[in-house]
Image 1 (cartoon, rainbow, N blue to C red):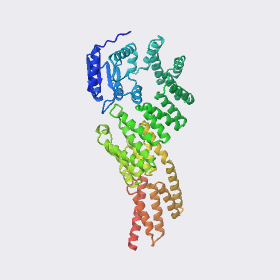
Image 2 (image 1 turned 90 degrees about the vertical axis):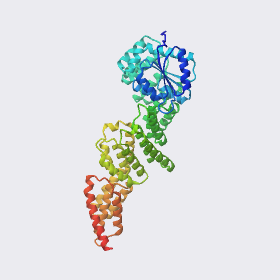
Image 3 (image 1 turned 45 degrees about the horizontal axis):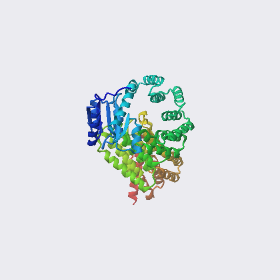
Image 4 (image 1 turned 180 degrees about the vertical axis):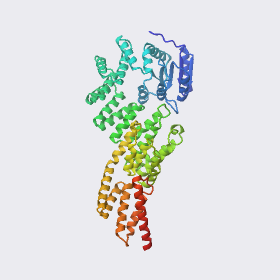
Length: 545
């Protein structure tokens, strides 16, 4: 057995409670450890780790404001501030299922519940150190992401039937899956489950069956895994993904909710929840998952303005799909409050044009509330500012869809590059908005074609009826408004000296619909001609009154 040498270890204790720091220092001193540093919060711990290489880290799960222990571990890994030989132990005074399982899923080296004894700690450290020393080369290959080396080292340990054979089988299986070596993966899983059926092998088998679209077999394995361990959140994740792929949305929603009840603080799980909830039309779950994604990544290395934007976009999407007035109002207030608060988070918004994003969001709220004129004015102001591949193009496109400017929206959407499509949440939201308004856009186009046919046949009154129907579908659509004005002016023209005041007033009202519109080149000349004709009739009416 390898002997753990404690005296030379460099230790970092991360805990915001001074009494625990003192208690743990006493235990560590009794074990012969003298080099002990302390950090009161996650940011301080990151700074310490950037300056020193620690052999052993004790990190409290709850660290007050800022990062928690789980987020700190993720950041240290992402920034590669942990040595391959480092031992990371989460400690906490809480033992709730959600707390424990969410921490364990991130796979720290160990997890201790306060209080713990010196003998327990020494025993755990001995086992952890033995594993790290025995598999030092493998841990180094994992840290440096060297799949060929990982595969070779795992096979060596498995062939020797060593103490860590099962661990190496699991690492090998995961690596083979990532490298898409599926034939070798099947052989390994079959051999690993020939005598007993470990949870890791069942999960990899289910994941493989899902990837191969073998949904019935995937569901069978998920159920087997759940029967063995009711707290296996990953099995519920895979089950939900499988049910979603089969179109069984109610079952998928049930499965993902079961996973969330076990371990909610897992980012991929929240992404899956959002995907399932959107497909199932579960609005509260959509908003909740989007907020969790924003909260889980905040103040971590995964912090990104896109998470905030997608949370706000999801709330706007939810408002548009909610009929309950009180729920709509709560979502509207939360949207405005989030926008307001975010203005003060300079670190988060510094590299974005947040003011413009906020303008678009407020305009979308106005459109959702039926106030199309101010929303249209905002769209008209911002549209000329949008350069090719501007990051705000998707949001402007969704605003244009909401005010019925379907052609303009389509033109902006056509400008989107693959970069915009790399955000799956934004892509889903934009696609959902396109689908939502697709029927209206088709109806509008058909009515405009019918109306113009009638207009060309000189049936101006009938054309007016059709263009009115078009504006009922899209009350502020510029093309339909211009078509209606053109037809109304033709009726005025036919009335010679006894021109109708009511029709003149209809013209004036319809012009107001588009007075703030950003007119494409195809409409600018037409608008000027119609405006000139309208002013002539206006003078005639003044003279005759």
